[in-house]
Length: 345
Image (cartoon, rainbow, N blue to C red; front, side):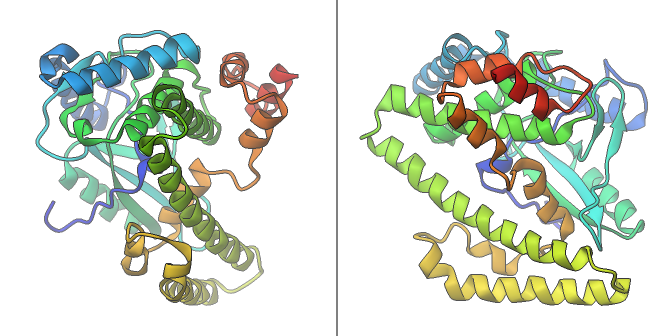
């Protein structure tokens, strides 16, 4: 890890990337990364062999809840376990224009274009960063704790997940099972927004039904979600400010200079207002973060500013199983948001 900074973002970015493995694709990148992925899969043992009875029971219950009560696709995902020596699975690279929120995408067979590229070797991620920076792009590298292989293989659990809280583990597993249930090629934004929403709401419902809304575990989840939303709201405010700059007819050098000022002012404001916004130190990292468009674009990818999914869910009786059933009807073609909305009418 020396020489590269991988920021482990809050659970809101966990399990973000989809990786094509070597059995599906050809080429140096996919063969190298696919071989690494298959290496992990070949080391997987039955979940029961993890030796942690509490972890086994929790994962089994989350899977049962997701499949039987929410209606996500039945699979053998998360029935196997891999010991790993680090606290993340892979390093994922994202990139974006310096003077706009035009995201860089990579084209993959089968799954189409995606705005990220995963590497199991951190040094390979750093090499990709250098290549992209030579293209004059903002680049971000983050650690992720899971990949979805979209049902092609049995996605395993990893040993570092044993330390996750019940709601974080539920969010991760449900999020990834959404990808294995609904994936619309060419619509990465919709895929991630949908998985993010269902993962979060599904985890909340799991905690409510298993622990109770008065439990310490449920209250801890709500408190963490509240802090996370405060941070997301702050980032979205910064994004809006930069969007106004980028939409103007300004000289590029001036735009980049103003961009730096806006980000620095946001950091100062964040520090000044921190105690009035947050009740813990979990987000103090922002003031020292090398914030750029690639980092901010991740929030644009995973979080909608129009609350589309929340509003649609509310209008249709807050029944997540019904919501998921409608999502399964979305097909490749026209606007997937519109298809989802029509399926719920």
